[in-house]
View 1 (cartoon, rainbow, N blue to C red):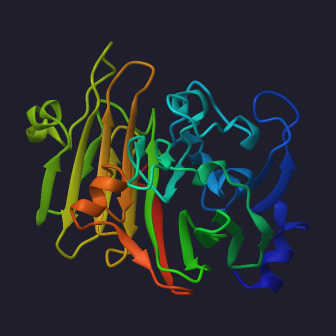
View 2 (tube, rainbow, N blue to C red):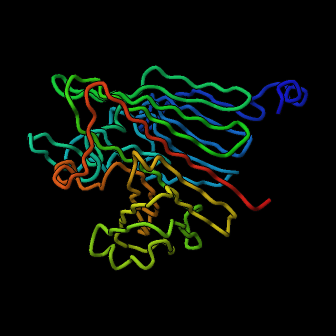
View 3 (cartoon, one colour):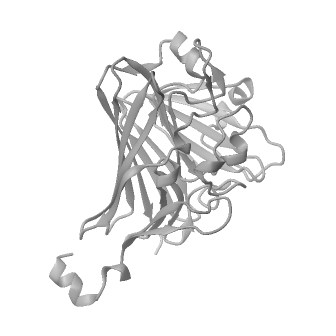
Length: 330
């Protein structure tokens, strides 16, 4: 809408869309900053600069889309990169970024360095923050840096572009190796869908031309129902599938009962694998759709199997992930 026409209807744009910076004052996330974003297209979301600029809760037209764990939002002070601690601080959220040195299970690399489950990225706070809107888009972003004296130094410049009048979220990362030696990295974009968007009525639509590899023997038994979901089951074991698309980086979660479709797309040239986390366990009911640089088998195994990427000194790579939500009900 043209600006002069828009302001003939409203006195302040926050009547229709907004980006607001707030600070939480209680609970395990006390003191963290949140960018709260709303759009005229029906999106409500939280962006968390104190947690790797990841995305927390997401609603579309009043319906919850994202998954939150029992722990909920966390403060970086609670992040303990030690064995067995991940479940104590994992908040879920619409986006939980894994990396940059390792993604997947806890592992000890060849040099003896311990890497916690899904890496340290989510425990890092961003700097150079911004959050603003114009008559077309809302922008939120900043820089996350992971470094160690005498070793690696990675910079991730992350930008969210969210159309004011739409219902899509574009996440763009520029990853740069700021060290004088070549450095290996892993990145996984853990996009988590929860109830009621995820239910026994939901279905997942993936391209027909793809290679699918189940992670476990139990996942192999569920291969024929990879794209189907049931209601929560007590004690149900999770299943993980690795999808390699030929030329169509797309995944669609459809809930016909709600009339809502969530379509995920990503930069296939830099994120060649889509991990799918299907957890129908009661109280832990979630679908993770996770564009990734590699299979999430740990740093040492990924290197051994030729899937561990690296950046030369001061080289950059750009990753992008887009989530688009549509509704066919009035």
